[in-house]
Image (cartoon, one colour):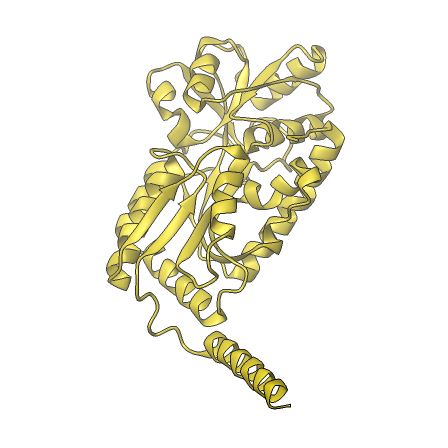
Length: 327
């Protein structure tokens, strides 16, 4: 009987300890270095921004904030490493909206739903995408491109940085909205993709500014539209999708967030959210974002989930209609 009472008392103490930890203010967080695992390769746009943010967070927290690049495996290498970490706030995971919203549809047999294993904790930025064509392309507008694709079913090629990427799914969405049929050409290397667009080996692709600016500045690419409802200051002469004669409802973008493994106390998640928002507001961070045409975001975790849900519905339909799989 005494043994049973001891077990009950121990269980109650553990439950109380967990409850107190979840409710207590995170005034002592962090008390040791924090690691941010990312599926993005070193030197990429998201990695460059993350390193600047990590440096600012480290100064704010008076602790080292380490970036651990784990590219490959469709994001699962980074995801699995972060998922195995203790749910204490000392391991964060940087993911884009496609890792959150598209990945469950692309790897159905894994039965992996990202937000069943992680909680969104802070938003970082959103990336708009342009439609890039070779400089000598005869297409001057999206209207020209769509007309050509309709007139030559399956003959017009577009490149992307991988199956299931925003560049691929954006192309699928363009086909869906216009009734056109085009040939998708996935690339392993982003640099090779835009080099081949510039040389005309593929007819067009979606492109972010940081990934395509080298070829653009070399005079080999033109942007004929931005897949967004309004123009951006960095490229004020590039028309919106609707202004260029494309489908007004086509928006192609990707947002990047920080997540924690399920089980991190709410107070610590709130602390991380508030401190990341402070860092995102830093003028140096804003200036770097402007360079990349990244839109800074200060979403709550609930807003991240709502925006991911919207994308998940769109991506789920596109994956189903296109019979796309990464199994």
